[in-house]
Length: 128
Image 1 (cartoon, one colour):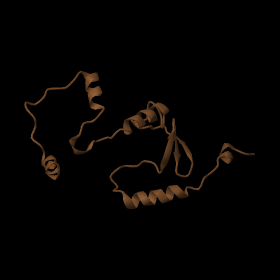
Image 2 (cartoon, one colour):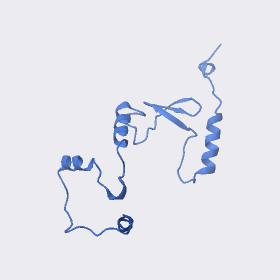
Image 3 (cartoon, helix red, strand yellow):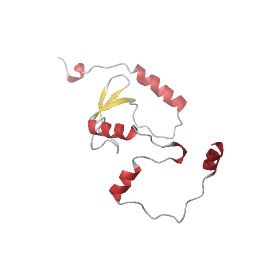
Image 4 (cartoon, one colour):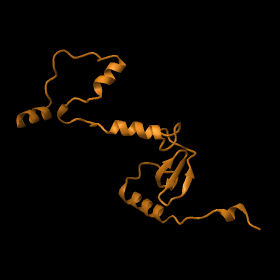
C-alpha cells in the first residue's frame, strides 16, 4: 500500500550544501538564518532554491509580504527606477528630482546663500 510520503521526490541538495559552505567562509555570522534554504528566485508565494526545489514562503519578509516575489509590477517599477543614473557624478543634478519635488510641493527651506564647496568639489574644480 503506498502512502503520501511515497510520492514525495527527494532532490539531492548538492548546490545548497556548496552555497552554505561558501556562505560560511565568505560572510560574517552576524545575520541570523533560520533555514538552510538558498533562494535563487521567487515566484509569487514560492521560493525556488539553487537545487530547483520549490518552497512555499510562509514567512515572506517585509519587502514581499503583500505582492509576493517577482510580481511583474514591482519588477517593472524597480527596473524603471534603476535605468537612470542613481547618483550623478560630481554633484550634478538628478533628472527625477524636479518632478518629484513638484509632486510633493516644492522645495523645503533653503539656507541663505550658497554652501561652500566641499574638499572633493574643490579638488574636482582644480583639475579642470
